[in-house]
Length: 150
Image (cartoon, rainbow, N blue to C red; front, side, top):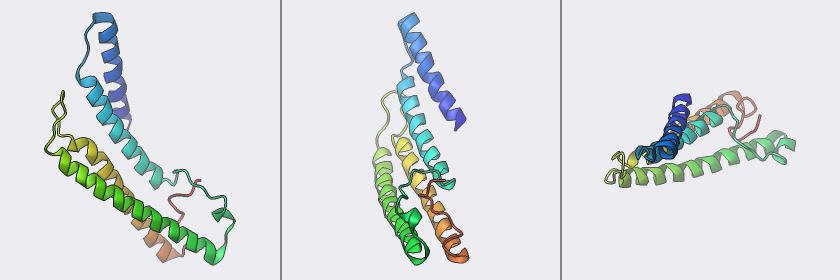
């Protein structure tokens, strides 16, 4: 993630210096920084899910125990799965639409930007599946929910 962030900062900084001191600029800086930012956010979201660092609202569920807590955890996983389904299918449609379109300056396929959310959704689905398998194998208490805040 650090190289993407560094590339984004460098592109914007270089564009700013060229624009204000030399009255010119890098035409690719906006497109490059936007593309890198999309991928940075998507990879960061996957890492946050893998580490259980996504924001969670557990004011009620943290007080539950036993069967009701397990039901809530499985309901949460089911809702996450539904959201990921819509994210993946929508991202796939955007990738297909972006294959025929090119960016105006850098001339890369716009599918490359949409692919960030597709990769993110697929990776999160794999993490969710692994969490469900671990919960089934070791009992629901052994597998922390991906939406739970540490």
